[in-house]
Amino acid sequence: MNAHSPNRRLDILFVEPDSSLEAYQSLSKTYSAIETPTWSLLLAESCRSKGFGVAILDCKAERLTDTQAIQRIHDADPRTVCFVLYGQNPNSGTTSMIGGTRLCEKLKAAYPEYPTCFVGPHVSALPREVLSCSFVDVVLLNEGVYALHDLLASDLKDNLNKIKGIGYKKDKKIILNPPRHVVPENKMDIDLPGYAWDLLPYEKKPLDLYRSHFWHAGYDHENRAPFAALYTSLGCPFKCDFCMINIMNRINSSDRITSANSAHIRYWSPEWIMREFNKLIEMGVRTIRISDEMFFLKSAHFEPLLKGLIKKDRDLRLWCYARVDTVTSKYLKLFRQAGVKWLAVGFESGNLSVRKSIAKGRFDEIDMKKIALQIDDAGINVAANYIFGLPDDNYETMVQTFDLACVLNTPFANFYTCMALPGSPLYLKALQNGWKLPDSYEGYAFMSYESQPLPTNYLSAAEVLKFRDEAWLKYHKRKEYLSLIERKFGAEQRKNVEKLIKVKIKRKILGDK
Image (cartoon, rainbow, N blue to C red; front, side):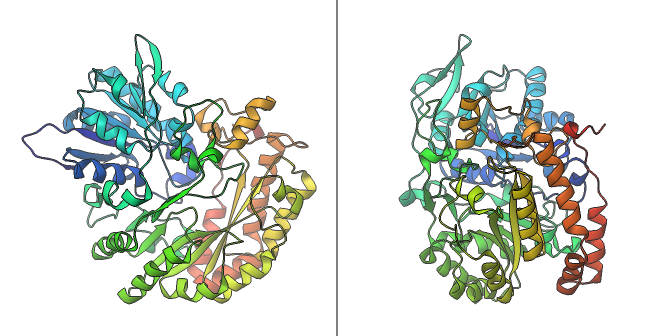
């Protein structure tokens, strides 16, 4: 859990709270992923490279109750407790606030002497809202690497006004200091020097408390752990209306700033990336997610890594993201040889005008069926992403999206509902237009009981959610789909999928009790 001298007090404990039960309901027990905590790992390694004593408490991986977590925090006795509220899905920063606020409030009630700090996309998007919580002392206004170094070098109470990139309270007044820049690309290897894998808990072997997405392991529970997820780059050059991932890059604290105002990407060097993969391989990890928003984008970035992995000659199970308009057929063989078994592709909508309305990019006329077939022909599985309830969606256009999913018939299909996630351009638009937004963090979770998608120009939120849930069930019950799973992965894996289909989740706005 920790890495510091026993004779010196721990400087910072990075806490990963558990929001899984609220976010995923009954799916959380067996089916949802338990991902390695990316930003806790990066921040911990960065801080200890500067000489600070660090530790990580992953409540989700260890399945700790709040009472157990508070005792562990007290036992660690850190100078400050940093709640890292981040995740690999676009909405995770907000849904992580469920467990983060609950646990932090209880911690402050039990041990008010511990300074608390929050960092994550939701925090970056709405720092004033987060600081309005009585139990939150400090927020980091973006990824917070340099601000955190400066904060830990201070006494954590005096002269906070001199630390750029933080927000805090003084005399009950919320103060946002001038911003601190994010780590520039030419210093990525130096100031974000790696992942602190050694600080993560395990039962019998490293990373065995973490598990991949069910589909990533070919619907085989045995292959889901040990598991790790890592970035090889940070950020994204695109400005999709529904996405907020670039809000972590912000260097402007104005209220009207969204992720579209800081859309850029930064890369680690191929040598740095290969070193991190080597660490995981040496620990026995074969199931790995490359979490980059745009891994299949710049060949000068991905080619050296993929060729390096091929030289390792390991049986890896990797997956990464690709945009429809960035998939280049000549590289697919290279991806497959390196161990990439899945490409996650955002098809989003089956209707051209709906796609155009969300500033998705330049794949208006691309033959999506052709792209999916090219990927499949290369021996790579397609994990297709679709969104129901985009602003211009009506019943007919959502049927078109569902029909597209059935035509492509990919071995994994992720059906999202459109959310105006804090930090996204769509969130600002929702505020300006007075659209109804969720009144709880749980409301932003796609699979939660309180899930509250945006209404469209033609449909209510309840109509969108009802369509999504029925479409998901209908898609996965189709003979064409189940036969595909059996053909690709085996009869036992088909049975595993059929068990998943039987898991029911409840929805408040649909009248479930």
